[in-house]
Every structure is written in structure tokens, then in C-alpha cells.
Image (cartoon, rainbow, N blue to C red; front, side):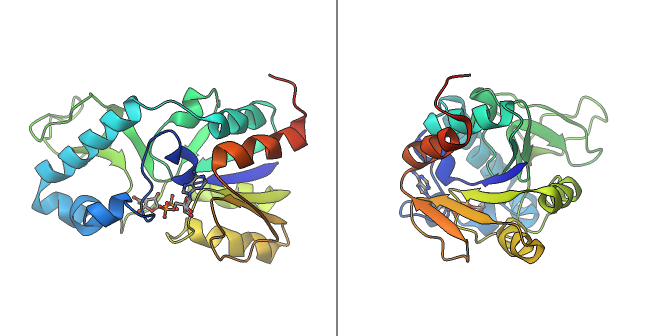
Length: 227
Ligand code: OAD
């Protein structure tokens, strides 16, 4: 099984901004204000507005050739897809299962009872939880200082992987940024597909826009036939 870790670069050509590139989200917004529990505590309206806008962008986006290629690899039973992205473009491309380490924009979570459900287009601060009635709703995304999802399963999948591939991620946010070292420690071959080298010690790299680099890599594994 190939362990595939994806980041914002995968969805860049679908029109969703990355975080740290020129004009990226963290050059426009203070992440302490919009992506931490403390920021939400101080100004929930600002935080909900930020995610409402991102949800609207994501809802208007379509998967690109790289999402389609990865979904094909997953459907063929060759890849475990793990993403840091909160969009669902891999699912829109037909992937059966994607582990969203940083949660999903299209889901709501109650901060009080932990229940989750599909997000409305626009979340409001006075919406109440259908299970416990609390008005403490948030997007089901992981903020800085919080524990990412699926970490136990990820550790098991990394241990079993025949190849570790990182696609469109700068490798700056832990724990995902540490997967390359973990793979190397296990003796697993590592490959990076990215716009430019991230600087992490991958065994091999292929560089260019994801929509141009990922499909030929998948074809080299599966052949060019459509499925
Ligand atoms: P970054 O914005 O840090 O990095 C994006 C990476 O994608 C960079 O290495 C770019 O070179 C590359 N890139 C840009 N355009 C590309 C393209 N068309 N094709 C291929 N690669 C391209 O985004 P992430 O690494 O995903 O977390 O960021 C990780 C986490 O930091 C995010 O999940 C988010 C953020 O803060 C949270 O919000 C918790």
C-alpha cells in the first residue's frame, strides 16, 4: 500500500488558496485569530465568517486532474489517502475513503457534546446543537494547538506502507511534517510531488504543478487505462 499525504498544493489549481505561498491564507489572515481555540473564544463571529467564506469557495471548486488520479489509485486499492486539506475534492473525484487529519469544512462540531453533522452553507454563532442544545458550534476543523484526527490509524498505515508520498505540502505543520522522518526511520522509500522542493530529505522528487506531475506518476503505477 502507498501512503499518500496531501496538502494545500493539491487543491491550488482548483482555485483554493494555499497557506504559505505568495498571497496565501496565512499572509492575509492572522492564524492566531482565525485558527486557534483562543481566537474562537475571543471572536467567534470573525472565525465563523472566515470558515463560511472558505466553505463557499470550496463548494464552488471542482477537483483537478491530480485529485482524479489519486482517487483512481485509491479505488484500485493501491493507496491510503491522508490529507491535511479541509476541502472534499478527493471525495468529489471519486475517492472512497480519505482520512482528513485537519477535519472538514463541510462538517459542524458541537464544542460541548462533540456531536458532528453536515454544515449549512453559513454557520451563525446562535445556531444550537441538535443533540444537547448548546450554542457552542464550530466548524469540524482542527485548529492550532488541537489534536489532529486519525493519528493512531495513520501510525499503523505508515508502518505498513511500501512507499511514502507527500503531495503539495510545505511540510511545516506537525505532526504531518514528521511523517517523512518516521518513514525514513522505518526504511520506507519516500517520494515528494510538489511545485518545488520542500527541503525535506525525500529519496526522490518530481516537481511541477500537481495536475501535471501526479497523473503521470499514477499512470506509471496503473497504466493509462481509465477506471
Ligand atoms: P502550505 O501552504 O504550507 O504549502 C503548500 C505547498 O504546496 C507548498 O510546498 C507549495 O510549493 C505547494 N504548491 C503550491 N501550488 C502547487 C501546485 N499547483 N501543485 C503542487 N504543489 C503546489 O500548505 P500545507 O502544507 O497544506 O493547517 O499546510 C499544512 C497545514 O498548514 C494546513 O493543513 C493548515 C495550515 O495551517 C491547519 O489549518 C491546522
